[in-house]
Length: 285
Image 1 (spheres, rainbow, N blue to C red):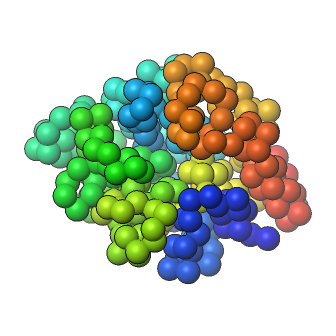
Image 2 (cartoon, one colour):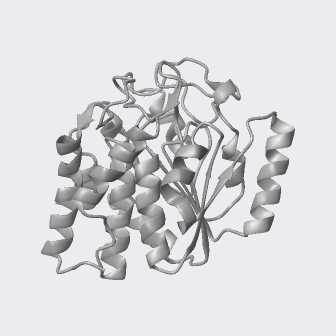
């Protein structure tokens, strides 16, 4: 059993169809990229659910778990999202890290904001998790193909030409999926019009949060200390997201679920990752 096996278990969306087109140890490779570039990490998240008029529970928990792990390793972490997810992220992160509200605006202004933010932060690595990405037509489409551009900041431009980027997604329309856009378009259960924004290392998972936990598990293997949260802490994190207005992306309701999985079902992935690290003799940080 590998990290990649665990985060692709219970795949209900067909994202595993992309696995043959990635390195067998794609999560470990992404973790290696991250740990080879210490300094300032930008962590991007926030996916708007049109039917609910709210952000979803998949993405922010994974982003925060990644950010906490990086901070424990000495990175400066800056979260980037837009006005629809910023209040939630700020409420949860508090004084632990800066949260940037990337404006929802036109192409020119978005590129300018991205350039200025990168110049200011000089990030060593950029990680995007469950963030809708631009299609070839220059719009943002949800999993059902509906246009959500007016609710989506063009954060993709932060990744432009940066050498150290990681994209994490589960449906084909997220930032980073441009690496396999031509393949995604041939998988009926994935995005019909996939994201074209590319990344250095792509991580796929049945649920994007699980991909985030997988990345942290792979970082833990390399750092030789368990950087994952406890089961209880992760469940509380999901509950906090819901209390702050996030919804389950499948039911579009403010319930304690992630992509349709109950808290207990969701925790099975984190439990398996903890067991994998324990089997390799890697204890808590």
